Length: 309
Length: 319
Picture 1 (tube, rainbow over the protein chains, first blue to last red):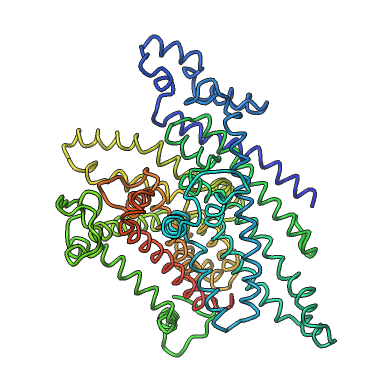
Picture 2: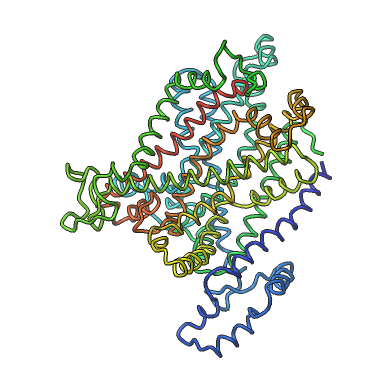
C-alpha cells in the first residue's frame, strides 16, 4: 500500500512538468503580447524591447521554461501580466479559499441529499418513487450548470425573489445557496444513482438473508449490514464528483460573480495572463491527482479485500 | 461476422444480433422517446434550410423582442431575428460539431489507439495509456478553453493567408474556422475514455480461440484488429458513444457560451443562452432564454436515455 502511494506521488512531478510545458507552449505561441498590454499608450519599439528584456521574454522558449520551473519549485510563481507588480501567488491565495468553501458546500449538498435519496429509491424498488428518482437522477447527472443556473435564477431569484442573483458574502449567507445547489445537482444525481445500485446489490446478498433469518430487527439489518457495505462504491463517486466540482466551478463562478479561482481562470484566459493560467493549471492538476489518490486510499480502507500493487 | 456468443446474448434462428437488439431497443418506451427527440431536433437542424421559417440572420426591426406569436412561434430576439429559426440553425451547428468530434476523436482516434494498446501490449500500451492519463489529469474543460483561445487566432491567420493565396473566399465568413477549432479541441479529449474502454475489451478478446485461429490463418494485424476483434468489442462502444454524444454536445455549448466557440452572428445554442441569461433580459423577456435552454436539456437527456436503454439491451450482464 505504502509503495503504491509513493509510486503514485512520484508520478506527480512528471505530470506537473508535462502540464506546465503544454501551457507554456500555448502561451508562447498564443495571441496577446504582455509587453504591449503593460505599456498601453506609452508603447514605443524601444520601450517594448527594453521591457521585453527586463521580463526575460526575449529568451528562447526552453530557457524561459527552465527558469520558470526553477522559480516555481521555490514557490515563486512569477508576476501577473495584467496586474503589474502583483505576484501570482498573492492573486490566487484568497480566491482558492473562496472556491474551496463553495466546493465544500456543493459536496455537502451532494452527499447529504444523494445518499438518502439513493437508499429511498432502493427500498422502494419498482414503485413510482423509484422510477421518479431514477429518471430525475439520469436527467440531472449530466445537465451542465449553465442550463440549470439560468433556470434557477429565473425561478428563485427573478420570479419568486427568494434568493439574491449573484455575489459572494462567505459561507454563511444566502448568496451561497444557489451556486452551491447548482454545482451540487450533478453530485446529488450521481451519488443517488450509485447508492441505489450498490444498495440493491447488497440487499440481494446471502448475508442479508442470514441477518434477517437470525431475527435481527430490520433497522439494524439496514443500518449495520446494508448501509455500510453499500457505501463502499459511493466513496469513489464522491471522489469523482470532486473533479466535476472543479469543472463546474468555472461556469458557476462566472455566472454568479463569485471571486474564486474558477472565474479567475476564465478571466485570465481572456486577458491572456499566462503566468496566472499556468499556475492555476498546476493547482488544478495537483488537486485532481491528490483527490483521486485519496479516493483510492479511502477505498482500501473501507474494503480491506482491495489490494494495490 | 459477429459472434453473439462472445457477448453473451442468445441468438434466435436466422436473426442477427443487431436486428434482435434493435427490436428489443424499440420495445423500450424510453428508447423510443429518446430516438424521437433526437430525430426531431437533429432532423430539423439537418434540414434547417428548408425547415426554418426565416433566415438565421434575417432581421425585422419592426418586431424586436416580441413574445411568441403566430408569425414568430418562439418570439424574436434583441435585433428582431426569429428565435425558432436561430434555434434550428443552432442545432445544425451543434450537429456538425458533435458528429465531427465523435467521428474523429472518439471513434477514429480512440478506437484505433485502444485496439493497438490492447492487442500489442508492452511499450505501445504503456505509451498510449500514459498519454491518456496526462489528458485526464486535469479538468478537460480548462484545456479545451485554453486551446480554443490560444490556437484559434493562429488558425484564423492561416486560413486568411490561404484565402488570399488561392482567391477562395468565404471560409472565414462562414465560420469554418470556429467549427474547425472547436471540434479539434473537443476531439483531443474525446479519445481517452474510448481508448480505455476498447483496450479493456481487447485484452480479454485477444485470448479467444477465434483470434488465434485467424492469426494462424495468416491474417494481417489490421485485419485481425478491425475484422475479427472490433466487431466483438462493439456493444460497449455503442453505449459509450451514445453517452458521450450528450457530453460533447454540451461541451460545444459551453465553449460558445464562453464566447470562444462559434461566434455570432452564426447561431449556436451556447451564444443564444448567453444572450438570454443576463438579469435584465431574464426579468423582461424570459422567452429569449427558455427555448435554447430547454432544447439543450432535452438533447443531453435524450442521449443519456438512449445510452441507458442501449446498455440494458447490449450489456444484459451489467444489470
